[in-house]
Amino acid sequence: MKKTLYIVRHGQTDLNKQGIVQGRGMDTDLNDEGRRQAAQFFEAYKTIPFDKIYVSALKRTQQSIQQFIDLGIPFEKLSGLDELAWGIYEGQASTPESKAAFMDLMRNWLHGNLDVKFEGGESPNDVKIRQEEAIKVIMSRPEEKNVLICMHGRAMRLILCLLTNRSLIEMEQFPHQNLVLYKVTFDGEKFDIVDFNNALHLKTS
Image (tube, rainbow, N blue to C red; front, side, top):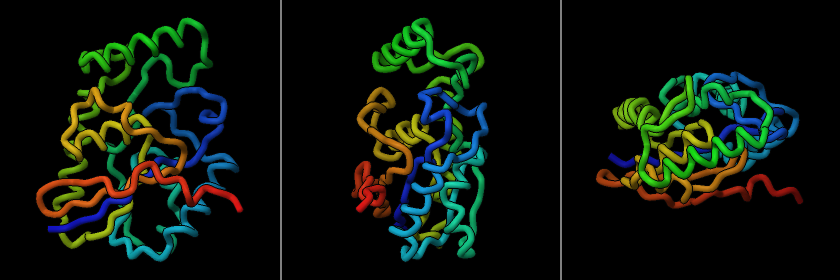
């Protein structure tokens, strides 16, 4: 079975613009810039014959690829694609204390302490469990050759580690901004990233 996954992060929201962490608990809408990014991505990839679209349970992902859905391409929501939950820090303005807490959390993760999480939040290992279920669903359908997946920044870093058989401590190896693309092929045995952090479709003339 061969399959190509086009994995994108959702477009910009007001909280993205303000540098405020959203996470799984913030069901925000795209802002004007996010809608513009969505239109740019659609223009660049509307000729790809997508067989199926998968989005998270959070509306900003569906809003980002709604134009593809409007073409009649079937889509499905998978909560396994939701963003990592940041718990008590979701939707909160950045403070020196919260910045220090995030830095400490990232240090823990990069040192392999992948069960560490904020109060009320999720760890990378928590997200891994639900992402493995989502991957199982997506890969169980061999008739879906070209698949568009819209998800979230931190979750995208983690799922790319899982697909490419990397440790989750390597998550920072996958940079991203709003509505960038990672194109991943599956040859029947392994996944390969053939388009890395592609933002060419967002360039304005």
